[in-house]
Each structure stands twice: as C-alpha cells, then as structure tokens.
Image (tube, rainbow, N blue to C red; front, side):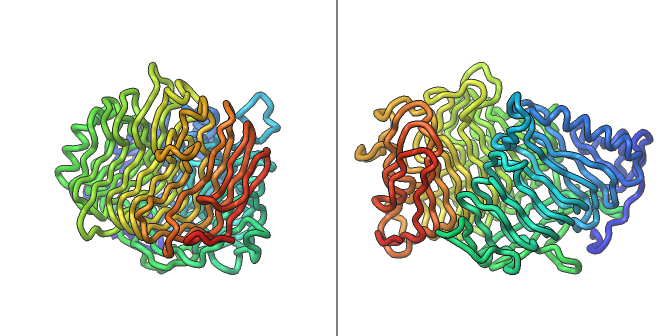
Length: 586
C-alpha cells in the first residue's frame, strides 16, 4: 500500500535513465519520459536540473498558449518535493503532483493569463481559455487562474491569494474543488463560477452567478441574492473526488480512488484522514494514441481492466463498451476520444459504480446518436462523471462535425462534477446547419446530481431532464448565436419561439436546482426567445436563484421560468428569480 503521510522517491536525472518501482516491475525514466506513459507525459523530480525543467515547461507553454484547436496533448507530473520553477497551463495541459497530499509537491508558481486572444494583449480576454487543469499540488505564491469552461483546479493548496481573472478581462469559468486557499479568492469579472468543498480566507468579486457548495463557512460571503450574486449551499449532498495518479518509492505508480462523501463541507485531504484507496497500476490498461484503437481498448475492458488514456487523440471507429461495474476510465492531459465512423465513443451496458474522468469527447464528421451513453441498471450504485468535456465542431475537419446528442444518462444515481457540453460557436466548419446537435445532455436516470453543468449553443434544448429526484448545483448556458430565422427555432409544441435552455419534462415530480445562469446573444437575427427554463408547475420541483442576461445583439427574452420573470430586451439587462415552485415565485 502507498504510505499515507509521505511518499519517498528516488532521484530522476533528466538525461540519465533511472529505474523506479512500478508494482513488481521497474520503469525507466529518461529525458523526463517513461515507456509506460509515453512521450506526451513528462515526469519531473526535485533532483533534476531545474534549468532544464524550466526550459521544458517554457517550451510546452509556448506551444500550447494559443493552441485552441490543435492536436497536441500534455500531462506534466511532479514527483513529491520542492521545485523553484514557474510555469503556466496552456491548452490541453494537465499539471499535477504525484504525492498523496497536495502539500507533498511544492511548486513556486503556476498561472494562466489571458494575453493571446487578439492582436491587443491588453484586453486580457479569458473567454476562450478552455481545456486545462491543475491538480494535487501546493503553489507557494499568489496564483492567477484566468480561465473559462472545461477547466479544473482540484486538490490544490495555494499559499497566497487566488485570482480568477486577468486584470478584470472577460472570463467565463469555472470550477474549483477540494482545495485550500490561504488567502482571498477574487473572482472579479468572472461571469459565473462553482466553488465546491473549498476553504479560503474570504471571497471578493461577483458578476452574475457565483455558487459556493460545501465551502468552509468562515470564508463564504454573507450577502446573497438579490443584493449579491452569491448562492450558498451549505453542504455537498453527495460527491466523489476525481481519481488521480500517485507515486510511491516502494510500490511505484498507482491510482488513488477517493471514497464517496455525503453532506460534506470543506476540503477532504487533511493529514491522517482516510479518503479512499490506491489501485495498483497493474489494474489499468495504459492506452496510447499511436498504438491503440477501439478494438485493443475493448479487449482490455472485456478482461476487467480499467483504462488510463495517455495524452493524445483516439479516433474510434466503434464505441468503447463498458460491461463491468466498477470500471474507471481516466484521461491524462485532456486525452480526446473522437468518433470516426458515426459511432458513439463510450457506451455502458448494465454496469454501475463507474468513473469517467478527465476526457474530452469529440463528435466526428459522420453523425452519431450520442457521444457517451450511460445505460440503465437496476438498483444502480452511484457513478461519477468528472471533468468530462464534449465538443461538436470547431476542430479542423474536411466536413462539419455532428451528433444528435452529446451525452445521454439513463443510469440512476449518476453524479456529474464539472461538465462542459459545447456545440462550437467558432472554429472550423461551424454554423447553424453545419455542426448540428439537437441536445447537449439528456438525463433520463433518477436521482442524478450535477455540479457545474455548462451547456451551450445546441440547436434544441441545451439540457433535457427527464428523470425524477434530480439535483443541479450551478448551471451555465448560452443559447445559440446563429439561429438563421425564428421559423427554424420553435418549441416542439409549436407555441413558442425558441427552446428553453433547461427543460424539466412535464412528468417529472421532484427536482431541485440552485445557481443557474442563462445568457442570450442573438448575433445573427432577432429571435424573440420565450423563456430560459421550463419546469412542471407542481410542488417538489423547485428552482433557487436563476438569472438571465442579455449579452448583445438582437433582442430578446420574454420570461425566466415558464411565464414568470421580467423580460430582457436591451444589452446588459438581467432578470432574476430567487425561488420558483408550483407557479409561485419571487
């Protein structure tokens, strides 16, 4: 077993290969790489030449700072110890420590700025700073983490302040979980954010929708809606933290799998706490983009293996079929699964207790029914979707990418923790009738819980929730910019212009949501959208703190929920509902 308190390690010299333990075998690391994980995974040690480490980090960021739709993927791991280096997380980059505790791995500085999006670096626009993460490290300075969707900061200690914007430039995040911030968190110009199970000295900054769920109460702001944009949920009802790679001198590499937590508050990795267990690396099939395909990965799944996807693009001509309960699919460095034959990428069949984490799933140029489909199972144990991102279009392609839906969840008791489901509004081959997708996410399972669900730009309902007992804590959505005319965007009953972003089906009898933001930007035409959210008017379906915002373009939106709430008809205008249930609202 990997020791809880301290991870011993041996020096890894960058230019001299040294054998380290990996279960019962020895793994050789040379030039910061190891055969087991391949060339896109960098592993640093405190014994390395820090000038060479710094040079390597600089080269990766220089390549990835502007690489919004490129194919390169990187995972950067630090063995436990201290590092006098400064780095930034660019596109498709994961930076993580290999200790059991964040405090085992200390790094001088990790930041993400927003200086690249236009010819004017002074605009500090972070609204396209997607697809990156920082995990399981201690950062011994103030941190700037100016990001938007599809980003995660997890299991991190920041010894100073944490700033979530770059000099108040536009930003549209974001997600922070299971972390300890010694100073102040400044969300500044962030449109929205979910802070879950964190501790901080205080929080400053607000815009439209800042949600704190299970944060330590002493740092949470006192003000709330409508005076301030803070929604506070005292405890996190049910969650499991993301599994992560660890290293121990005796047992080598393993994957730490945290336990489920109920009604939790603050971070969970204090010294001497028993949060979960370590699985040996031998329990995992290590997939690589150059040598693996759907057949080799499915063979490993059929043999009962979990899968680690090393960084890369996996073009799948058939679905990865999960049939064993307890299966883990874990991506490194934003590993990307791409449909290549009109197929789904991941399908589960009568399996539960699943963990899908750290993956970007792309639609291909032949339309599929779904990208991910979690099938039903009777009396299902909880399953986890964690840092799962979905994309329809934007990538370079000879034809538009398309799918009917990104993800369908038929599996009861599924928990989603930081999802961005995106029909591309920019990039290659995008347009209303080009990169088509009717729905972002469809939830048919009962007792499904979503934290930080962000769904944008789909042709129909962004989110369609059909299951009972559902919970959604923090929701963000922009409806499509590119509707060509109002005749092409009419609700299924034919009575209203525009689809609500969030549709709770008429036969649902129990549902709760808190901290929702739905934004309108009619860029191309005047589409008089009716409402942001539709719910059945019955007791037991309750929405707490929802805001609509008119960003720009043509007007407008009539209501917030069903027939309730004020219209927004001019840029910058917002409308709020604090509580809605059974047709009653305030």
